[in-house]
Image 1 (tube, rainbow, N blue to C red):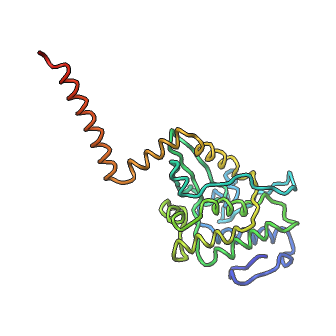
Image 2 (image 1 turned 30 degrees about the vertical axis):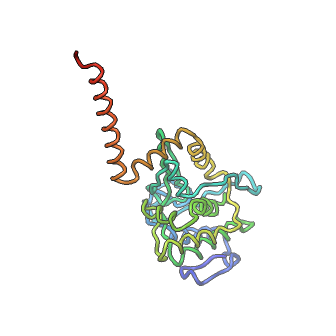
Length: 255
């Protein structure tokens, strides 16, 4: 079911008589749930090839298959990703599919679209998810998949805190614990499409499963987690160098 500008006012999908009306409603709902972004971009599919004169958004519909999709990944939360050397950064747009990952040596970067979380977030996204479930609405479950992806990253308040620090999540609810509970509750029993974020998920899995990357990332986080540990590491290297230098000159000093 969908709501009007007042998130507490619920209307039935049958009240939207035409396909155009349904699409316009969805555009308004998604727009109100997102951060302002460049008008060259759409919220859900990016829309990079179509410049829109107004602040509107569009949905990408997958008409190639009507089969039910199943989730294929058991994903890691933010804390585990950080331990594997993965940093979080905000994407340039608030398009829900603007999620990407790249890896250089042992450091990976996960880009996520920024999102505002407040009292209206729960009703808005749940209504959008319900709309995607309508049998006469052919789509690729973009909103459902995005919510499942975000939920997989959030297990506890510390994960929310990390997303806030990265500028990805703006907390208008109050405590980080409330936000974590909201996402965990909303995503109960949801089935995302395995097609939308499968490439990103596979890249992250490959990064996390690489033994040498894990060792390097753990060493990096251990040695450089604070200025004091960094100074201690530099001091230890300097001490080893001086010790080796002293040993060398002791052995090779002229008789």
